[in-house]
Length: 479
Ligand SMILES: [Zn+2]
Image 1 (cartoon, rainbow, N blue to C red):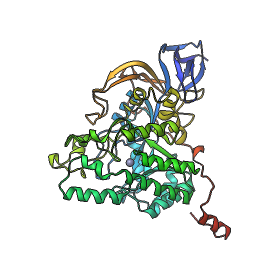
Image 2: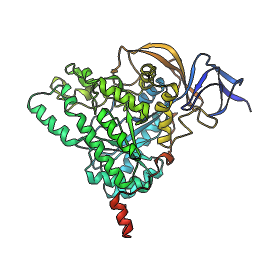
Image 3: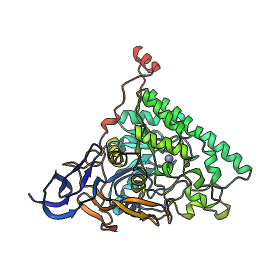
Image 4: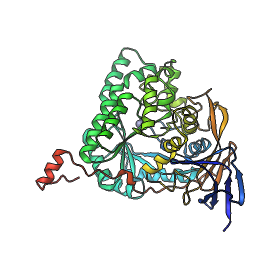
């Protein structure tokens, strides 16, 4: 049977190797990978890199924050923005707030995404209300419908869980085969410092970065690692920002635990100095905040040695109303937290990673590991026969001065930077969705991805002494 489309003459890069081959596509799939292919249509990729489309496993889309602020992006604008930056799969969050019924939250996100997404998407959950119904009924049902991961918060007044609730959620994850993603910061430290700062009249955005201390991140990571060890449940620490936090993960991994780490563009390419520009610094505020050059170096090292397993955007798109709801009277406690990053995540790492990581590592950190960790591999995250034809063709020499992006925040923290290397043509399931910088995708063409249990996330089967003792006494702990 003839091929529908051939990407010819390019250099294919996967997480394992770089090689010359034509990519033969029939329908939505890659069906051949060798030299000399011909098909009905051809895209000439001579001199270009042919990479798997990015998988962004941490982004907030059309989501209400815990403070009640809606993101500026909906599923259309966010996925359009992602596609322009070479990302072809997103896994955003369905956010349960206190009092919400989880099953209703999930249904609501499904209906909004279905109508608008231009690329494929999975979902994680945010669990803020781990009551009986959530833990016993809705959460297991969601997991078995292919939503196999959820985020919990150790800070933020309205979403944080108590230690007991964290253990409850981990037990449910362990029982049903899901991954727990953790926003790890010590709540007491942050709110205690923030209260004092505001009382002393220190309300500018730069004090946000003071209150979210390095120690608050490290303490929370160390604590939640102990919880995960008790329950024997794999966890992923999201948006790690400090050398101390990375070290805590490195030590947990050295003890053989399944503790994964993630970092984001804001921790590699911004510092606290970007926030220290008066009220406008609100635009650069996220939690945890960007740190300093030393922390940036630690993040690079963590990505290189595998302590940090994935590189995601944590795209949290708020416009001016979310950032400065009370205008000049806004204190750092009232700003919506988060920065946009879906579109520039890959081009930033491509540019600044040139002397630090290989092309294979670039693919691994932006695509393959996300697909493997979250149960989408090998359908997504690679270029191989049988995989979806989700492909970004990169011009490694293309210079782009960042002006605006396609999201709806109205700004980018990376304005003015000159990036070298850009995805010029992007395909999703065999269809060209971005051609030379122009959108060619129809609203709502993206499909929901039911995710499989990830083999990487099997529990260790290793007990802490107390759990082992219970087993020896024939009175095992019931999760
Ligand atoms: Zn977070």
